[in-house]
Image (cartoon, rainbow, N blue to C red; front, side, top):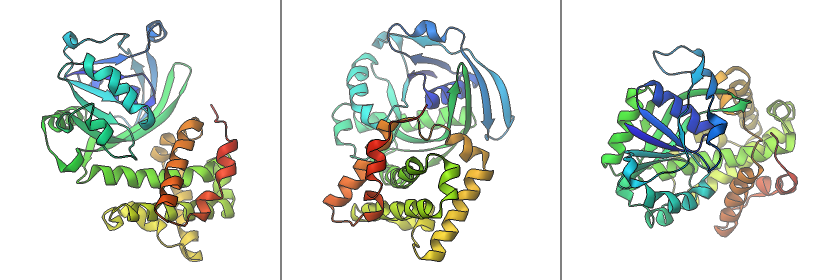
Length: 319
């Protein structure tokens, strides 16, 4: 499948490498004047959880890049692994240049699909949540790849979804088809957005788990963010990953802390997926204020999350 990937960031490079290895024609669209930067490609240091693949893989991705795109290029699928707050401006520029290509939006969502639908018909795009991550060290991508959650808004199943499924199957990327992809993405948004401020305040994952006070405040913040979702009509019972945040009694907080500590200490997939955790202050602030402001508008008390605001305001990001 002839596939265009927007940018050569962590997620785009990981999936681009996987799909190129599976035999697909993959090209990354990079900013004008940046193509020469990628002429040597990337060294790949990958913890690969896919079935049938070497778990600890060291190799090379001879990435193909372009600085321009036109409808005549004939791309069948465009993958957009961008920050959610940059999505609309990306689509505004790209959709007219890609003809009839379908889109796979590997990004988060908080504001719903209406603005997206004005630029791209819902029959032509799929949302996705990547179970992958890592960081760049020079020309080496240290990462992990496992699976992906996908779905169309409103439970649709159009040809664009079949394209994404076929692409995943060819590369042995396991996928979960979400019945309500927006609600699923909002759940991930709430969990991430609730825990991120605790990480900012502590400065590292190790410091979060060393401070019971900060860790428990982070869990309470997630609980508040999940209450926002309830107000938005999300049935949390359908998302088992939310269960451990529901009990904010002392014993519940203690158990949740132990579970999270074990995940980050012993699960290599979680460790590598979180390597970029404090790298983007703009993204962290976007999550924080989306959740806090929506909660306030809906009348949800959010003292634990709000208490992190000075830390969020003073945070400048770490490379």
